Amino acid sequence: MSSNDSTNRRDHTRVKVSVPVEIKTEDSTSPIRGATADLSLTGCYIETIFPFPVGTHLDLQLSIENVVLLVAATVVTRDPQVGNGIRFSRMLTEDRKALEAFLEAAQKEKEQAQEQAQEQPQEKAQDQDQENAQDEAQNQGQKAGSGELSKGPATLA
Image (cartoon, rainbow, N blue to C red; front, side):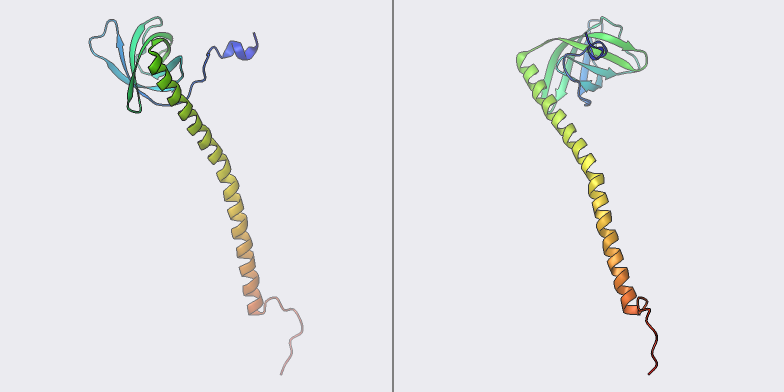
């Protein structure tokens, strides 16, 4: 096992995306509402100041776009006053397909935003170079018109 395999235990890449989630436990009478901090096909991270104990079985309702996905899940990590790592254990096939399509679209959107962010500094630098060249040309034209550039002897008429 490589060091990368030991540090990343996930089978699927998690996408940093906030998705509304409704959480029900075996002991709860009313749902707890929150949002994911990240999401994958096999799990998510939910930030909460009151995390559930590891091993707690949850029924989740993830709201993506106009679809509510029903997911059976288990708490696998607990970070006090931060949140829980959740592993999905059961999901309908059509819900899994909807989640997969949503995650692919979210990942593409994230990659496009990163590409645009990398291109913008280059475009700004090019724009600044053009502005500097235009300013320099304008300054040269003003100097020529005012006679500042002529250094020849002055003649009297």
